[in-house]
Each structure stands twice: as C-alpha cells, then as structure tokens.
Length: 424
Image 1 (tube, rainbow, N blue to C red):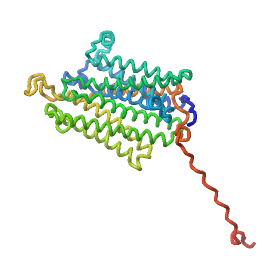
Image 2 (image 1 turned 45 degrees about the vertical axis):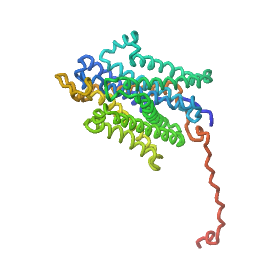
Image 3 (image 1 turned 60 degrees about the vertical axis):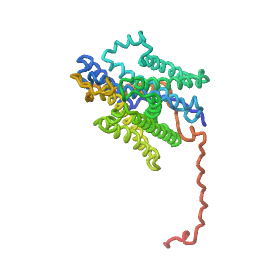
Image 4 (image 1 turned 60 degrees about the horizontal axis):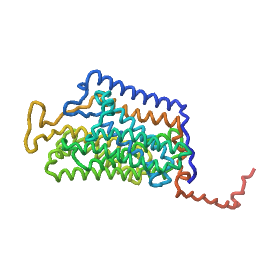
C-alpha cells in the first residue's frame, strides 16, 4: 500500500459556493423556525401534553446516533488494524463530529427554553440518564477531537492507536446512553426494554456508515478524486451486514414483547392497529430502510452500480428516520398504562391514543440539523487536509494485483492480394 497524501479541496468553483449558500440558507431557516416556535409558543407545532418529543427530536436522535456510527471507519483502521481504511479515518472523525453538532443543535433549540441548558449543565441528577448524556456528548467532542488532532499532526501520529481506542470505547458508551434513554423509561410500554441499548448501537453502525458512504462518494466525484471499486465494495458489503443486523434486533425486540402479555397491546398498536405508525413501520422502516437496500446492495447487478449503492444509502437514511419516528412518536402516542389491568377514561385523554401531526417549523428545524452538519464538513475539507488525494485500488488495496498487459499480436504477412495495386 502506497503512502497517501492528504489535501484540502480548492473550493473555488461556483458549485462549491452554491452548495455552501444552500446549506447556510437551510441553517438560517432552522434558526427562523426556532424563533417562530419560541416567540409564539409550542402550540404552533404538532406537539401536545401527550406528545412532548416531536419531529425535531426524531432528527436530533438520528443525527446523534449516526455520529457514533460515522466514526466506525476510523475505529476499524486504528483499533482493528485494517490498513485499507486508514485513508478514510480523518474524514470519518470529521463527519462524526459534524453530525453530533447538528444533532445537538436541533436538540437544544427544541427545548422550549434553551437557556435552561445552563441549569442542566450546572446541577446534575445522576439518577437521570439525561444527566449522563451531557457528559457523554461533551466528552465525545473532546475525545474525538483529540483523536483527529493525533492524525492531523504528524508528530502525534504515534499516539493515534491509543486515541482511537479511547474514541471507540466512548462512542459505544454514547450510543448506549442514547438507547438507554428509552430503555430506562418504564412508564412507556413501547420503550421499556433492555435491548434498546444494543439495538441503538447497531442502528448507529448502519445510519452512520450510510451517511459516510454518501459523503465519500459525492466528495470524490465532485473533486475528481479516484475512488476504486475495492473500497466501495468493502464499504457497501459492510453496510449490508449492519442493515441485516438492525432487522435482526428489531425482530428480536418485537418477538420478545409479543411473548410478554403486558406488551401485547402496544405491539398490536405498532404492528397492526396503529394507523400511520404501522404504515411507517412496515413501509418506511422495514421495506424502504431494510429489505429494499439489502436487495440492492447484494444483487449481482445493482451491487456493482454506484448509483444504486448511493440510492441504497439514501433509503437507509429514510428508513432510519422512520424507525426513530416510530420509536419516539409512536411510543408516546400509545396511552400510558397508569393502572394495569383496568380501563382508564377521563377528560384529559387518559387511555386514548394521542394524535400528532408534524408542523412545518418542526420539519425545517430538523432538516437544519442535517444542513448544519454538512456545512461543517464542506467548510472543514476546504480548510484542512481531510481528504486523501487518491483512493484508487492500486494505491489503497494491499491485495491489489495489476491486470496483465495484453500481448501484442504478431503482424500478419502481406499476401499477393494485399500487395496488388489497381492498374493505372
């Protein structure tokens, strides 16, 4: 494997500045949506006393979970010693930090009172998983930032493996903490499950790698950097394994709940009687986010087509948002079981499935988180050398074998007919 030169992009084209303008416009629109919701109150959104975590939380949790998974490529190279992935480690750390920044931006702006974050950061209730997550999120920035510095600074390269191992452990803790938010909430029947933590870890692998692969393909294509088939094939095969693992954990989660009688009602709500939530689960999460991408990634024809691989990544992202939507919104819509074994009815919607319709400001704020993350990536790759100059098979694949050169065919001897000329 040849030494790889890392460079930044020129960033002088009209296309680059147009992209920055669009991303900045989306970010500004998200801030405007936040001002509108804060100025008028959250009654202008689809959120209610029953649905207190709306669409912005769906985007925020997705981005936070994907941030951990985007770091997976760097972990494979540093912790597990896979040399082929080393040229992608810098970009992996950048995408991870950018996604976490975008997710936390949405999360903080959706609090209703963002200034209350100061209280959460100065007064801790360590019985609350939310207090733990403040340390996990801020620690992720510190640990991954140091890891990135070790790779960018040549004098510190010898410490890359140690920093990479620390980042690997921290990212597992971060995703475990995010999944435990739902696993520890025993009041919600759709949440109360120990499998939530490991399921969120494998979800992070799938969502983060899908976003990373899209960023890699778009960046190499627009900057005309060679991207060999060997790298694409390895990444898309790894992505397929993660997608299959997510489907496995989802199946185990619901089959386990179906075994317990107390969860029969909520399982019937999600899988059969939930209306929009049932549709989002089967069509968005299972079909678009799971079965269809697996078929595209592993089919002999579409698995070699880069456009189909990019389409699979986009479908996985859409399916991931659908999965988080079902978990967060669907879990809140199902009524609380305050008195198990009894039917509850009152004027405060007790025992009634809560209604929720996402509003435009919520959707704009969520998309602004994506825009912020990609804006950070776009600016960073222009300022610092995050991108390898080449990812061609001959330069990054240690098992690459150059194809044999075609042998030259011997020249045929001229015949009498060939030498004959027409008479004058």
